[in-house]
Length: 241
Image (cartoon, rainbow, N blue to C red; front, side, top):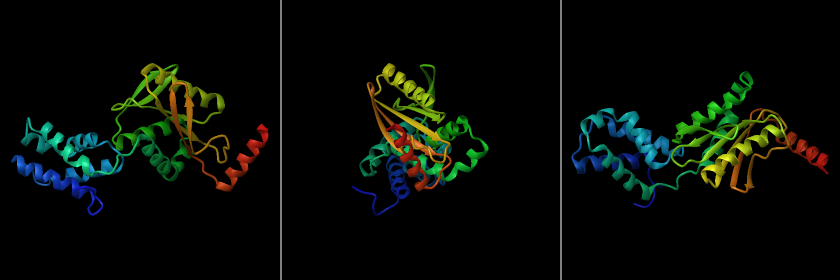
């Protein structure tokens, strides 16, 4: 089978789960395959890596399954991943997930931000979203601050509230420090922009630094009309000439 175009992701997962259980004569608690498949499919659609989606779905829905099949769950996970990998669409990159978060945040988080206009509100929502998308996050110290790191790939993510050029550049320096120390060629910078017409930030940019490339995503926490942002950008550019 080479495509999922004719069936949903949940059905594709479920059919392979049931095949493996039948072929291996494993215990099959009532409702397990459906609950597991729906959860795994949800995680995959959010951009979780395949192995992480299977592991988390088993942890969240497979308590009875694990008890019935002690010593056999790891081989089940490995075979399910092997059977699913050829038919899944290309997994989302971390940049894809961050752009999904941008769309979500600009629709859903702006009202909460007005009540909590601080960096911690932005960071915690980003971390929660990444965790739900299957990216396990840990914080590590870098330079004079901290960066979030995707545990499975060691990709660093810096998140800052825009507080002027100096604070913005400090975030880039923290990312570079981590990239330099850990030998990472990619970093990700999420900037939460609290101003309605900040012309100094693009929605998405790629910065070339000596260590590699930093992908920058700006999230508009006080979105104005596009015409206002264009007007502000023209004024900002004129002030630099």
